[in-house]
Amino acid sequence: MTKPTLGSLEVFDDIASISRQACDDLIPLCCDAIAARGVCRIALAGGSTPKLLYRLMAENQQAFDWAKIELFWGDERNVLPEDDDSNFRMVREAMLDHVPIPEANVFRVPIDPADPAATALQYEATLKAQFGGDSLQWDLVLLGMGDDAHTASLFPQTTAIDSSDRLFVENWVEKFDTFRQTLTAPAINSARNVWFLIGGAGKREALQHVWGDRQAPAEFPSQLIRPSAGKLRWMIAIDAMPETA
Ligand code: 6PG
Image 1 (tube, rainbow, N blue to C red):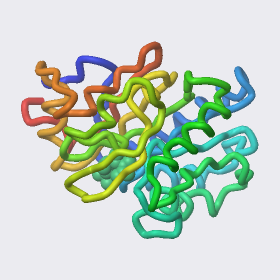
Image 2 (cartoon, rainbow, N blue to C red):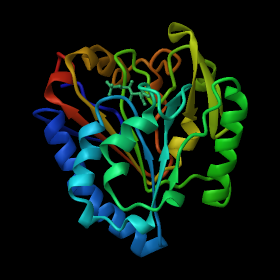
Image 3 (cartoon, rainbow, N blue to C red):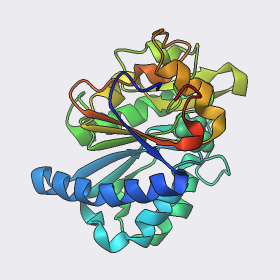
Image 4 (cartoon, protein in one colour):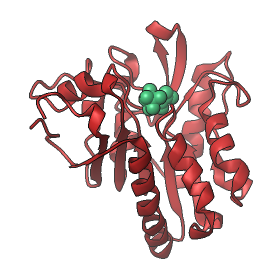
């Protein structure tokens, strides 16, 4: 069976069951973080896979102490918050519009489509200010993965992959002919918990490579995710599990 070389693996029937389990586990995770540090800091994933999880968090909003939860974005598209492609908009419609989270606890990436470099520097400064330094000890980073093995907006053969002295950067993605904004691998790997939520047959081959013996993060950027002291969790729908499973 092809398994991850790092982290725990749980296989689910589908994205719906992943989302329910993730929502159930988020409740104690947030409670424990707030009890220990007075705040729970989460970096949200974009794309389509986590949308149901965000909806479930809204449906179970009474279980969360929203006044002590801070939400950030692990990556964002180079578009304004009202744009269809905006990860912020996706989360707003799925969750933020329905829960009593203080606006001051929602840290949107302040996209200026004309100046991606300035956008990244501004968000990086916000992260450092909120965390009180360069070590972003997230309570949780949620990640998806593309069928090209990218995660967050760390795409194959892009400059952000090699970034080791930054926390958040603009990243030119040739195949989309646009910039993305993304946490760097070091900024993700300082998390206490990192959960990959992955589903869809189109991701099988990518997972085969990511979990394979050949380490080539420039080709398979999800291989960069190796929490230094935190826990890595793969929550995988059966249709995304590699053939040789
Ligand atoms: C984004 C994401 C990205 C996403 C993958 C998977 O902004 O698109 O953050 O990393 O997680 O592309 O996307 P799906 O969940 O839509 O398959």
